[in-house]
Amino acid sequence: MARLPRLTVPGYPHHVIQRGNNRQAIFASDDDRRALLALWAEYAEKFQVAVHAYVLMSNHFHLLVTPSTESGLPLMMQAVGRRYVRHFNDAHGRSGTLWEGRYRSTLIETERYLLACMVYIDLNPVRAGMVAAPADYPWSSHAHHIGLRHDGLITPHALVWALGNTPFAREAAYAELVQGGLSAADQQALTDATLKGWALGSADFLGDLKRRTDRRAEPLKPGRPVVTRHAS
Image (cartoon, rainbow, N blue to C red; front, side, top):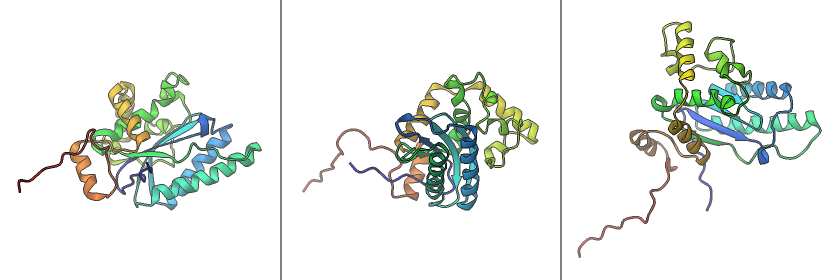
């Protein structure tokens, strides 16, 4: 069966995952990490994609973004992917592919899942046993959101601004959200939706997406379709 095209709708937040081929490392040095961040900054601006959160893991990365156009996110990911592979191969004397096929992504319902997705992203290094707390990990946007450093790549989402009337209040409120963690159900839902490419949200949210795009936003219900027979 042919794969469905990615579901990309401007104005909605998208959770993106890109993995290394055969789960190989996609970074061999901090220079590699800085190179990828610089490429994101360059092409996010060029293709009008707002970056809300990210984390660089050893063999994959996560992004939370809102594209302004239908083509912005695919064009950004394609340009960054190609240039980063060229950088990585040149820097480390290798050739060939680096990525595990195409990136995975999903639309998420803003009010229900945007902040949960940010927490999910920030907690990745903790779940992987790399650090004890998100603030201990230098290669994510977490430090920006809790006021430890400024990250020019980040465009705060309106929901983050709504967390408080001052920067300190917003940072404290977000730190408290992350400290509270994520339910197992939300964690599984965010992972499954992104890897399978289905939108994540309420029935009303999915219904609205159906009116905005020809591409299916959720899997078909199991079982054979019901055929209504009319009396002759």
